[in-house]
Length: 373
Image (tube, one colour):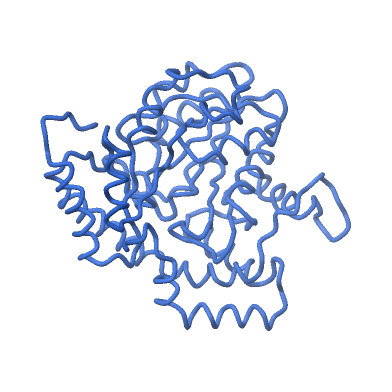
């Protein structure tokens, strides 16, 4: 069996550090927020080249707070993409605002910047690009459009810890950056967790209150807030893992380069790296019109895979009220039918990469098929 991701292998590689951090947090009895979370906020914000970090309980909460801090509410519109995890859209809906989709670029899978201006109306308040699979969206034109129209830019960086756009870390490019620490992420907690980073002091102040019942001091509630606080133990664990993130990122990039080489003679299309991008490969998503068949073959050979994502958000029954139809976003819909995520984690061994690639090559040899990109 070759797992899609191996969290146990990661834990065992740093077991002594994790165990010591957990015991220290237990002995401190600072189980909600506390000194470990404060330290994580400072260290992660610095890592992202942002002034402040606000630790929360999930990446979804990070998105929700970012939107609320930016003043997004009922009647507003937020431009985003349909090819993403559903939390991107859900967080917009939590505020009472309406998600407005634009299609993705078929090569990068991130927001097609040429479609943004046509989607802007008098109700538009923000643009929410998604740094999908570990690759940044094309932020320069997004920021330029936002400046001209007076819009806030909120980065969904849930899959892009350590990724860079033209040499600048994601999360610090827009007004607010949102990260998830779900266990399978490049920087994952042993449970749930999230972080918002910003260099805007007003946004910071508002989000700190909102994550803790809207209080600026205990029992003094200035806003109608939420219980979005991070656990102290998760803060301690993430501080340990953050120290290893650069090393793990380079391992992922090395694995991706090896996959690229080994799959060059196959029919699948391998991930494109945009010229502005430092890709961190949260997932390594290949692409083929025969995706479902290939996944079945790999499964029979004991190789776990994933599909990120099989149904774009605009076609999910939960969001039917938005009024979109099949064919509205053809690039997102085609990607949803064709992408397949191969095993990807820092601890993957070369022989495992070779086995996965050999199964793909043997079953989908290079033919006269036009690869995407």
